[in-house]
Length: 395
Image 1: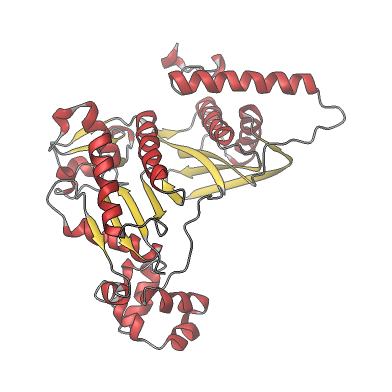
Image 2 (image 1 turned 180 degrees about the vertical axis):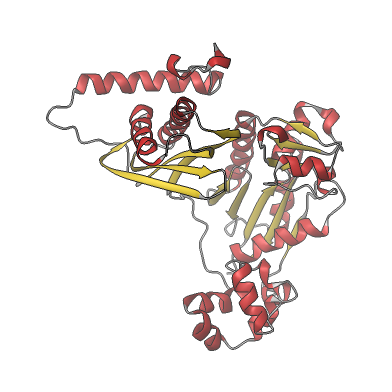
């Protein structure tokens, strides 16, 4: 039996949530993100803004040059998480086989449902449109690869200056024919370097790859060549994975102006460590490897890490290690453009106590951390701060 796989993508998700808050934004060019004079980046932009060339991940200063009338809206991640949970609740009501890729994207396996895949997709789209007032697009196919590409194609074909709210169906047996005319860059695993290598062979469409001898692709690209040959023919046997393993969690910030002040860098690291610790605990994890990331004014980037002999999910310990790494690897006075903190090497949250560990103090600290998490979840990440972290502007 052919599988029925849906790829769901919420159209300009952050913008759609902002339009619910402020309906006057509907139809106007606006972007969610930071201010251009503070090195802000476009997190999401409306379709009206996209007609001017504005794109996600673009520096906000560039976006404003492209669209001088661009409205800039600060992001509200709490609202986006809440809206995402509401969408995923509807998705999980439909099928338990859901692989959430990000806050606004997921794969669904609906093979066991009796209705045709297209009918299921249209019903899900109507539910999200009507119940949550959010636009969404879906790709429908027999596997994840083709469903994802179908969604991309469907959205592109619906360019109207408005959210596409598209559905693109690839019937069973038509996978290779659907992919054939598309440029090689649409295929998973084909980046600029691989595309350049393929172009030297005269391979510019996915169909060109499918027609090329598979053994020659393997000879030229190794294991990657074998994958290219399969994917170009629309073959993808990967299941929808209901549990995705988190490999690392990190937080970073780009300063509005390069920072040379040690106190500011330390204060920022501690705030980032708080955010990392909170997310680690939300996901029920505990990590062993803590790293910092420093980007200098010339855009070169330094990363350094330390692996502990135990796991941790505590803000204070993450911050302590990060601050030590900063002290060891930041030349005092060197301008810093970006700073970040991360943790990896995850296990379930269990720490083996040493002989001399104060069990009472550790438990007391965990209770305090839990209370702080609850306050920040309810009132925002800045609701509770260390007195030592308050800069002159906060006093």
